[in-house]
Length: 368
Image (cartoon, rainbow, N blue to C red; front, side, top):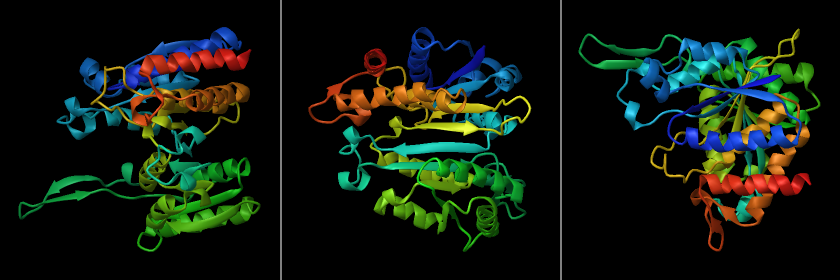
């Protein structure tokens, strides 16, 4: 039986994951989807309970789960903790130890929300971008790193950007394979003009393309230009593949194009075992913990619900079920239901639970 680990985390994480669990349980009742659920702590909540943002016991569960549904971590309560104890280190440990090297972040603008974007509707209408971010290498994990006090009493901070041929090739392969299922266009973003790691990135992407994916169009773009092009003409992009740092920045920028960062899901995938077929995977909304609205029932649950759709698609091969979730979200938005972050004049404003209520009711309608 399928085993799913729930890690609600901090801030609005528990709220949105609770609502996503309701949607998941609908599939258990109505779509012959058999699964078991287990829940544990991560981030600040784990630190408060265990003194670590990711306990060994939780990690043991993560290693055996078929998929992980993740809420969010962090908040001002834990800002003063030592660097290695901060809530975000719990998520980084999961990514690193499970080798979740491929982060998929779609930026999709639902037609009903084209007026909610900060860009003109004609710029974002029909937007459908997939950002493929390398997640376990680069400057977030490179060594040496740290802060040192120099002889004259001043301090110096060092973070090291490191990539190998293998790391670049495996994320490139994911991007090209996904592009084959979409528009067959990949833009690889780096800083080859000023960074040796960017030179290697560009060379290895081109080499992989020429050897295995010549049917997919490949273009290279400096990451800063890519950031500019995302707000100038975002629909020129199909798939963007980039490193850990630039992927973090560019995916958040792309998220805002859609009207709200509270709308967008993500998937973090590891390599599939060739013998068992098992693939480590973690799914999470990209909006963060939003501590300013935590506990108030205001959070938008749609990004987390759409993360479940990605889970159904990528981990369990339930394509029709994934499509059903996405259609339900599209329909309720078209009918004018909104949370505060995407509220527009003349629409119906709902809280976290009420928004999930209408999603579940729409699932009932669409499934019959």
